Every structure is written in C-alpha cells, then in structure tokens.
Image 1 (cartoon, helix red, strand yellow):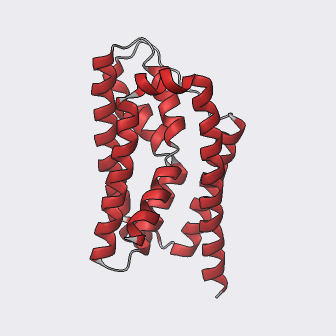
Image 2: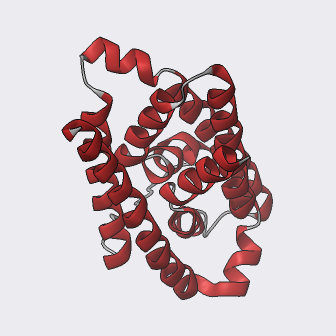
Length: 198
C-alpha cells in the first residue's frame, strides 16, 4: 500500500496537473462542453498508454543505450527540476493552436509535451527500472493509471474548476505544484548521486 501511495503521489505531481488543466482550458476556450469532455477522455487514454510503455520498457531502454540507472536518475531529476522552475516562474511555454480541430489536440500538445514532458518521461523510465519484481511493477502501473485518471477527471470537469478557482487561481496552484515537483526532482538527483558514490 505504501508503494502504491508513494508512486501515485510522485506521478501525480510530476505531471503538474494544474498546469495541464490551465493549458487545457486555454486551448479549448472556444469548444463546447461535449467537445471538451471528449477531448479529456482522449487525452487520458493517450497519456495512460504512453506512460505505461515508458514504465514497462524502462529497463530495456537502459540496456540498449548502455546507460546506468543512477545516471538516468540524475539526468531525469535535473530535467524535472527545470520544469518545476518554469512552473514556479510561470515561464513554461504557452501552447499556440491555429486552425486545429479540438479533437486533434489530444496527443500533441496535450499528452506530449504538456502532460508528459522530457522530465516526466525520464522519471517514468527510472521508476519502471527500480521496481524489483512483477508485483511492484503492477502496483506502480496501477498507481500510474489512477494518477492519470484523476488528472483526466479534472480535465473532464474543467468547466467546474474554471468557475470555482478561475484562471488566476489555477496559475497560483500551478506554482505550488512546482514546489512539490522541485522536491521530487531533488530527491531523484540525491538518490542517483548517493547510489553512484556508494
């Protein structure tokens, strides 16, 4: 249970849900409620599929490229830290959409790179490689699916969130998420350095 909860929290915060929600609201501002909900479902399914691929095949990717797990921990943690800094400073690149159907935004840009950026991909690879047996891997995969579904529900109910919190409120929550993200990324870097030095 502890593994499930810790994996869920890591995945949830590293995907920066409130930033994703802010971008989702921005790119769907002219869409109908039914279009937004359909898009939210497509984004959720796309993120689940891609995230599971990264998690399940992490060890194989390390073996192909000859990269150690510790080196990847440090690199992925550094990338995730940069994402956290961008969230806190509000300088993460805006998403510009021109003459595009709302339904075409599910994979690019909403799934990649908004929800699953380079830092998130790196951490998913590391997490998948860290699990020592099939039970841990399945627990991690279940936590991942639950985290993504919870973000998907936020997107599905984006109209309600926008009315309750407002765009300014979402930006503030995004900055707070950035602080948690910075702590998670620092932990990955420190773990990588500690293992490397041992």
